[in-house]
Length: 198
Image (cartoon, rainbow, N blue to C red):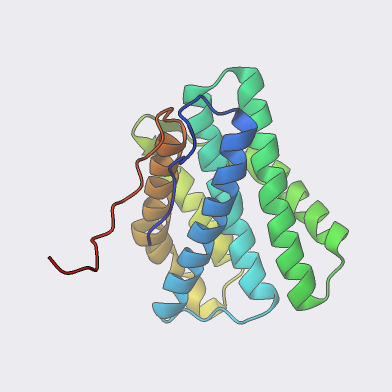
């Protein structure tokens, strides 16, 4: 999956809010991509509540991954701004989509997502995340959470799909995106080959 993660404006340092605004879009794309890959791997995820429950767990995981990266890079105050804004923006997008497609109450959808984020934050705090990325337990817990929403037939097998493929790839994309977004130099636009003759 290709993601756009460079600034195209004049080179300057961006605020934690600006970076988390940009990351919120990327995080949503990564989660949808993981869902698509999982379905293509023949796991049964029905359109409806199960679909959105899978997305919620993956989005929460990615927000908490981003928070651990922010811990390495930002002051405590900036990290709080970054993570709170990221969680809020992702929750808004998730709630808008879920409420529109499942006719759920928008405010209630967002509240449930934020409540679950707060719960998962405490649970994932049990696991380590260093400069090499998350430990096995971080991945294993995501796999367990997703296993809980799968059918009995898929719940055992989903663990390997998440731990071996979807979660590591997603973490790599978040790490790369944040590296790119923290650069102060704008990326130069690509030159397109001219369509003319000689």
